[in-house]
Length: 392
Ligand SMILES: *Cc1c(COP(=O)(O)O)cnc(C)c1O
Image 1 (cartoon, rainbow, N blue to C red):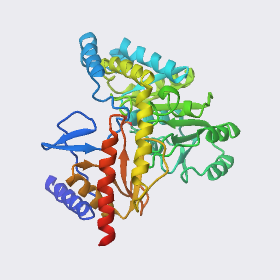
Image 2 (cartoon, rainbow, N blue to C red):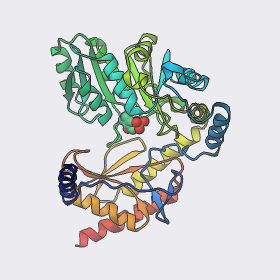
Image 3 (cartoon, rainbow, N blue to C red):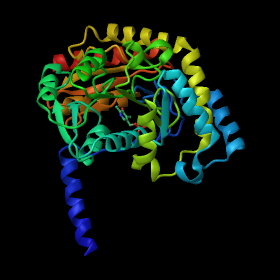
């Protein structure tokens, strides 16, 4: 019988491979950084979410070691049993101070934070209004929540307003990526908040890609828009710009306490190693104190736009380190990504269903650790490919 299952799966996998949808993992032999080593070869990489270049920072490595000596390597229990350490607690307080929200709660990952907060705050009789381009974790959370799941076209606030106006739901939650992960554009937070106020809805912001990068000293997208409202439930990850691992939700006291009581992905899982929280305290210091990292990113983004200007392929408008070069056809995007790789440059090709059909793209993500020379090198190779494909 088990053979039947493997035969069936093998066929499905083969079909996936034929449709060029099969996914393969790269195995890094080096730390996450702008130059990585894979199978003995060095690559210039534009793939990570390590926007500030902190994932391999010597002070964070030292902080993890110090944290391990102080707290050991494992939490050993869930937060509500005996896994909640003073390191977790100190980080939650530091994150509240940093973001300006009354209280925060750590989760093991952003995926789990979204799962936990959406399902704890929305259920039968409630409605979730979600941008079509939201991250998969938000969609998965909405689907298991039992709330009515209503999606609006990307950034289309007039459709959202109609949906909100028609809704009879008890509780209304508008959920959006603050920075969209495949396009790099930013949600109109102030306008969304105004709609939430008008229709008595809550606004959940997933700032996975804005925290540490946007706003005053890296405080994120809420700071960038200079909004302040009790309706905002803010989520950010700590494995991207913060360089380590984990996530947190920031909101009013009553919301956070509700998550502690009801968020299943918080309750039924082992707490993250306290040594990581210890390191994240240091990471927060670097995020806040080292403005040069964000300034460098701004310069790199400007440089990239300049390099890409003469190409036939266009960058989507984005002021964030996520820069999408739209190629169009899947095969072409894969081909360009493969050729770049042969030339020692890693840029992932992103295809449907992750993005809309006909908008296969290279997703170029920048880090403060890149040099101007890295951008110039990428530009030169892309121009060469562009010229070759014109003459063909
Ligand atoms: C990465 C990401 C997540 C998930 O965060 P993890 O900590 O990696 O689980 C959630 N939302 C968005 C928009 C993301 O990009």
